[in-house]
Length: 208
Ligand SMILES: Nc1ncnc2c1ncn2[C@@H]1O[C@H](COP(=O)(O)OP(=O)(O)OP(=O)(O)O)[C@@H](O)[C@H]1O
Ligand SMILES: [Mg+2]
Image (cartoon, rainbow, N blue to C red; front, top):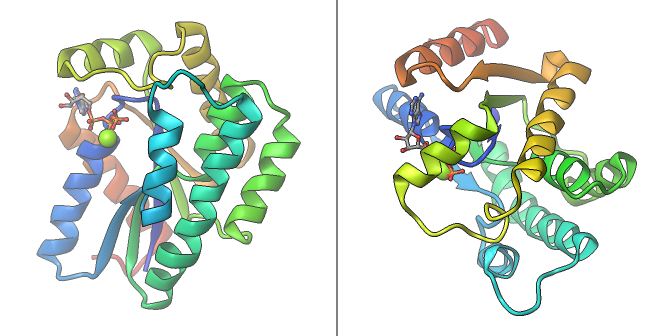
């Protein structure tokens, strides 16, 4: 059982790395769930739509934070804790660290307030490991453009916003290094997967 959160800027390779781990877990017949934030539940997916869609009225920064946290508490209660109780792996695309990076870093809400809300929403549940795919803002934008999908409301923010988000991730990892694996997302998918697996084996000796 391993609860992993995949973090980083949009287009940093979270989905690609999660897919590689998913293949590995399937090859080893290990039980796992793959899920994402915001979303992961019916209520969460409705909140995701409110958070990410571009409508004539955007949530203000405090409202936005509360919507993310509402999605998170539903996700923890209905999906993540039950999976951990069943001793399954949990691969989660973004978790509490994204609120610190985007809402404290990007939106400049106080760190203490975001921490408190994260703790409330998760009932103090933390991933065993946060995996940060660190990428420059320029490269993140290039990769997203190459993919050619329409930008959501958060992706449409200015480069300075995304720069603060990137720094928000790096600062968290620097504060509690034992809770983080920081990877250079510019490396190849094969190297990233190998580095992640090496770290997982180090953290959990029984991992084959
Ligand atoms: N290590 C890598 N090196 C180069 N390109 C990569 C790497 N990993 C993923 N990519 C490419 O970058 C793009 C974004 O990757 P991916 O969708 O995995 O990122 P993501 O973090 O899940 O993005 P999003 O936050 O938008 O869901 C894709 O086109 C993917 O093929
Ligand atoms: Mg993705």
